[in-house]
Length: 120
Image 1 (cartoon, rainbow, N blue to C red):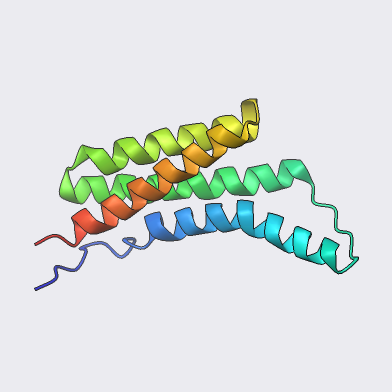
Image 2 (image 1 turned 120 degrees about the vertical axis):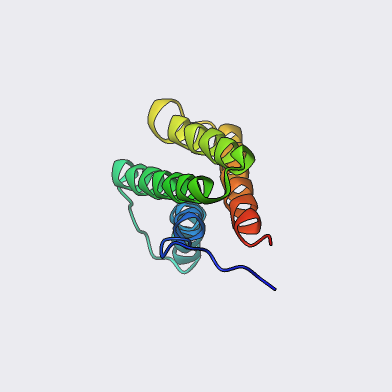
């Protein structure tokens, strides 16, 4: 039997992670698609980076809430490393590899947290 999370915010880690990834790569896809149609769209890079950073922090907060319930440190460590790398790429020095590795670690942490929360 599958155990349901105790908290009403169990969705926060997954939603934050999904929004961070969509804010980054979804925006790129939309701008690229519009460019193919001959429509030019300018995105304020600071606002874009701020949105991605905010969603990554929200995802980490959700993973932290999951840790309070299951006490497995792996998802929190993975999420923290991922968030730190994403923030580094957004705020300090942009590097595509750092960004991608950060998102992979963040997605891994959120998925791991989700799995651990549903373990009997």
